[in-house]
Length: 85
Image 1 (cartoon, rainbow, N blue to C red):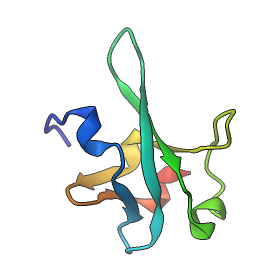
Image 2: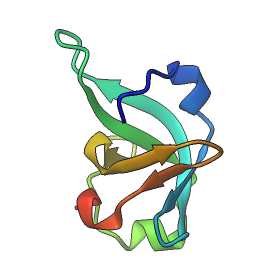
Image 3: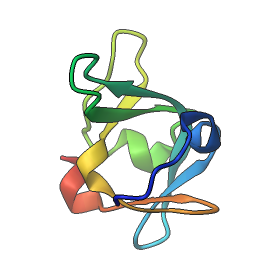
Image 4: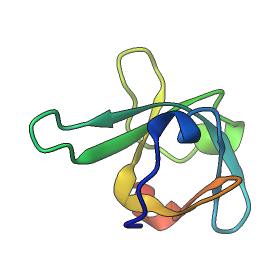
């Protein structure tokens, strides 16, 4: 995952697990301002499956997917369900 991408290329993409289960859409990305380290993908429109995963949420109720769980970014953002918890 060392390829550089512009954040606006990722926002709006569908997030799926490596098993192909839909999770939601990327609403935003959170990062550490000092180091630039990416922390979370903020999801909007979470699927019922995503809501059952017991992942962290922000104050607005959006799901927060750890950046470390991302396996690939292409037409979709593919995440490892095991690394989301």
